[in-house]
Image (tube, rainbow, N blue to C red; front, side):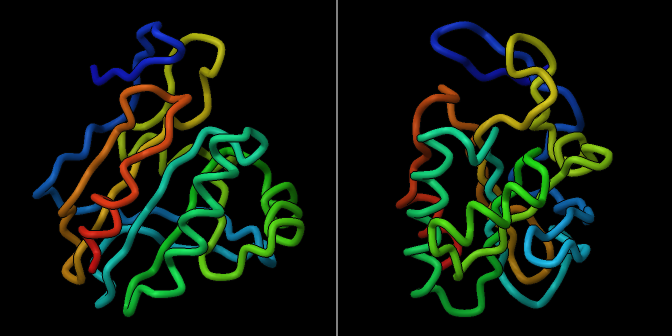
Length: 167
């Protein structure tokens, strides 16, 4: 079982562990803009950056989403999606309040299909049931080319490495 840390304590992750070189599972999440289905993973003919965050209602997740939104404007042929367990209504409100326009903010609240398919579901501890902080880069053919499970959930990811993986 894969793990990460929360304030120095080990947290177990549930689901199918996806590795670099694997086919990215194709999963449907809910777009916070209009509640439409959004498919992440699989071969789409575009590069994808799929960013899992525990909740947009935390300072680190909000900062991470703002940073990726800023960087996404300069990425050509890249579909960037932020996925959390937040309800789509909260995601929509966050996007409106924060001016998030360059990334899709989506929710995995219905069945936790994304969290389980990518192995990023927190299985125990105070955050059980939400996603850990993770990033997956997927090429046009649907192969995972980069993966980061952020070692400490309260820390920001390696933005430069994630962005380099889709440039």
